Image 1 (cartoon, rainbow, N blue to C red):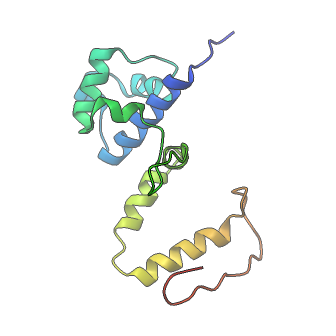
Image 2 (image 1 turned 120 degrees about the horizontal axis):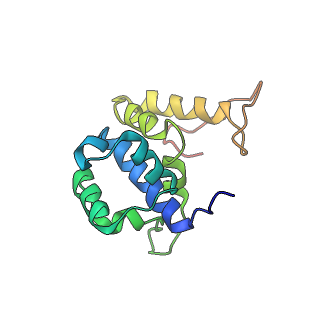
Length: 140
């Protein structure tokens, strides 16, 4: 029977994955194989404190950021793990990098409209979805 993955190990692993994908490197820089990095990212192998420190240094983030799984609203209230969960999805960091490279805001808005039309609230593809209209100010 496989051992259960502790939620903190999973959260740290997901954060390592997000930052690794953003920086597009890690294993060689910290002296482990890509397979070992994947075990860290899935939470199946725990990361020792010295290696965690080296990972954070390599990724250019404070160690505490690897334990962060919260977003805060403008008034300082904790809003849950939404951003981390979204960024941990396959191809999310690559999608965000491409989105950030779009210089034209109209193209960005069209891209968001397309993504929203392709998926319903459950994340399932929608056939024949109607395009939502937006005002010129970008409000909906």
